[in-house]
Image (cartoon, rainbow, N blue to C red; front, top):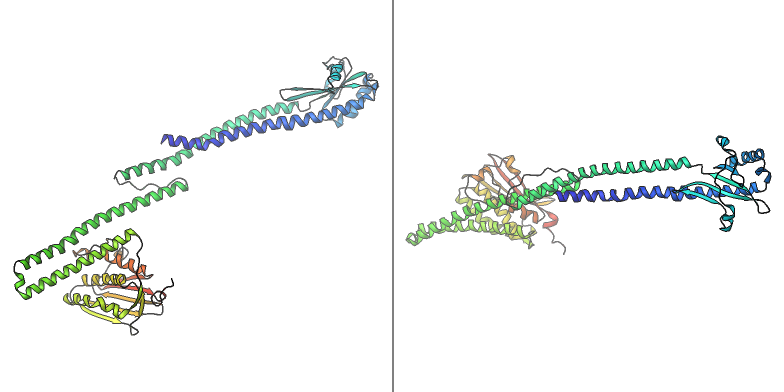
Length: 475
């Protein structure tokens, strides 16, 4: 994790470490060399040559300090630099700066005019540490004789000093920015690294078979999405593990009871019970009932297998509703009668209706509803099967007068392996019947609704849209 944090920190600092110093140095260098130095040198050189040309036509100013002062007074307002005039020997004649009055007559270093001519250099420009100091231009009369020197001093000397100060301030700002960026990047790395570390540890614990606690969804948006995905995955894995354990327990129970009953009946028949016709008939009937329950269990497991493999695949065809219902309702009517339940079938006067459905799949859904109604309705109760067509849909209703389902249980009754309080008192069932019925109805683009009152009974309604049931869909 420390390596990860260091990498995150380094990745966040690389742009700051490279771009900011380079940009600061580059900007400072360009300002000094390309803007200030270049423009100032060009401008001072131009002004120095103009003053030299003008002063060469007035030779008297080089001999008379008064006229020299007058010349400087007229020219200096149009200049950006301090103007100084020297005689050929380097003595200061006049300066445009009144504070230089005490320097009048003193000797200054001036260039060798003859050497400048030989090198074809019109002026001497003094630059020190990328700072232009002054420009000295020799002045010649019409006969080519040296009559003096014009010197322009850099008026931006203080600006250079300020530039140096600015450069130092810039480095301090860059250093401060780097420190602040380092602190912020470290904090950002910690914010990103902590949830990643927790997620990695939780994933390791999960892979080791432990049950991790839900992680707090904090941090940047991407990190929160990762944590939310991990929490969802953990929750689903826990749900699947709980469902797996419940499925195994139910399978053991559901397979053990009918197999035990079948073995007892077969041993009774082998022991001579078959000699009594009435007893043989009762045993055979009991064995048939247990086989019917095993077949229902097999159907539930087959549906569960289909859910694992993918979406349900229906084999739809046009079906006559009256013929379709007559295939399985009589069997359930006999079971209801054996349990001493009242059985009633109410069909719409418009029956039969042609439905475009998968008859076996939809029959499985309806039979699951009927099986539940018979199972949880006590003797003396009533089972009512109704089928009718409304302007919008076809409805098939299974209603009972059983114990009913509470409001809290109604929200969970369609979840896999969920059994209501009344169902838990009975040994049969894996808690998949209603889930299978709902999935099969949804596969037909329909819906399964529940209305139930505890102590009164329950009504399950299969609703199929008429656009689905009346016309065969286009290929």
